[in-house]
Length: 457
Ligand code: AMP
Ligand code: ZN
Figure 1 (cartoon, rainbow, N blue to C red):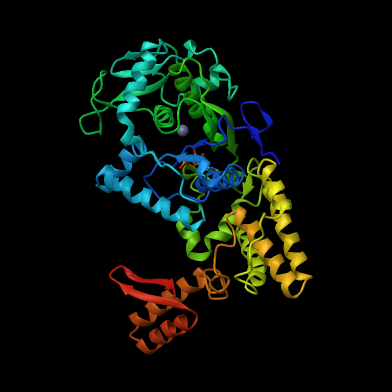
Figure 2 (figure 1 turned 120 degrees about the vertical axis):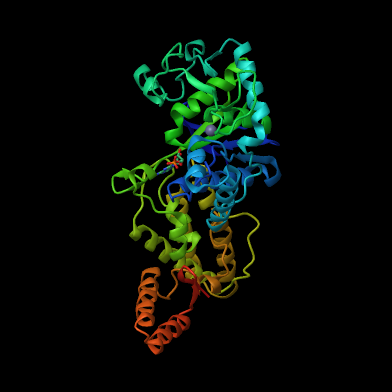
C-alpha cells in the first residue's frame, strides 16, 4: 500500500515516491530557542513525528533521515539574552534542552539530525558567495540581498502577489534594496551584537539562509520532503527555494512540500504576539504528554485545530479507556503486521481522525473477546497505537500520573495558598494537615526560598 501526501507545491495529494528508498530525506524547520514553546509550536513537531514514524514503517527505520534544525542565532534571541542579562549561548542551550525534553514528553522521537545554525556559519557564507557568483544576489551597505527578480520561479510555492511579497519582506524597505521584495541573506552586526567575519564585513545570517545551508550540508541539494507550519510557506519556504535552487543550477529543493495548519484559541491563531498561548510546560503540569499528543492529532493536520480544555479532557478520557483495556494484558504479543485499518488511514495523507476511529474499533473488537483471542486483540490494538506514538506508558503508571484521579493543578495551587495563609497566621497544625492531605492524594509539597512548589509523587 502506497503512502499518499498532500504536496503544497502541487496543491494536491500525490503518491509519495522517494528519490532513493534506501535514503529517504525529510527536513522540518525547527524552533528558535529563546523561550518556552507553546502548544501551537508543537503541532508541527508532533505531525512530522507521525510522518517520520510512517516513513520508517514504509521504508525501514534506518532508511529515513529526518533533520529538524535548531535556530540558535536570531534577533529575538539577541533581545532575549539582553533582557535576561545572559550570554546568548546560555539562553539557546537552556531552551534547546527544554525543547528536547518537552518533545520527549509528547512521545516525539528525536530526529536523526539536529543541525544548529551557529555550527553552519561557514556553509552559509559559502552559499552567499555562490549566490553572488550565480548572479542571484548582490552586496549593498554591509548587507547581501537576494534579488527576487532574477529567480523566475519566485512565488511558485505560495503564489503570493507582489504587494504581499513586499509586505512579507517584513522590514521597512531599505534604500539599498534594488527591489523592495528582495530579502536579506547576510546582515551587518553592530559591535555589541554577535557576528562572524565574512567577505561583506562582520555580520550574521538571515533566517532563510540558515535552513538552505543546513539542508545542503546535512541532506543534500534535493530532499524528498520539506515540512513546516503553513505560515512558513511565505516568505520562509519561498525564500529557501529561491536560495537553494539558484545555488544548485535550478535543482528543486524538495520533491514534496508538507504544511500543517494552525492551532487556534477560539477563532484566532494561538500566538505569542496575541498573548493567547498555552505553554507546554504548564499543560504538562496537569496532563500526561500523551493526552496532549492525542489532542494535537485529533484533527487532520491540514485543518485548523481549536485548543480547548474540553478537547484535552476528552483526549485524556479516551486514552483512559484504551489504557484500562491495555492494563489487562500489558505484555500482550504484538502481531507480525500492525492492523491494516489504522495503517491505511495514516497512509492516506496522515488521516489521524480516521486512524483514531480505527483504534476505537480495535478496542471494541477486543472487548467482545475472551481469553487468548482477547489478549491477541489487545496486542493488535497496542501495535496500532504505537504506530502513532500512543500507548507508551505502563498502564498502571498511566492511572497514577497527571490528570489521574488526584486533585487538579488548580486545586493543588489553592490548597498551597491556603497552607501559606495558615502558616502566616501561625496555625501550623492546619498547615501540616493540608500538606499531609495533599501527600495522601499523591502530591508532594516542597518548601523553597521562592515559596512552596509541588510535584506528583
Ligand atoms: P512563533 O514562536 O510564534 O514565532 O512560532 C514559531 C513557529 O511555530 C511558526 O513559524 C509556526 O510554524 C509554528 N506555530 C506558531 N504558532 C502556531 C500555531 N498556533 N499553530 C501551529 N503552528 C504554530
Ligand atoms: Zn526553514
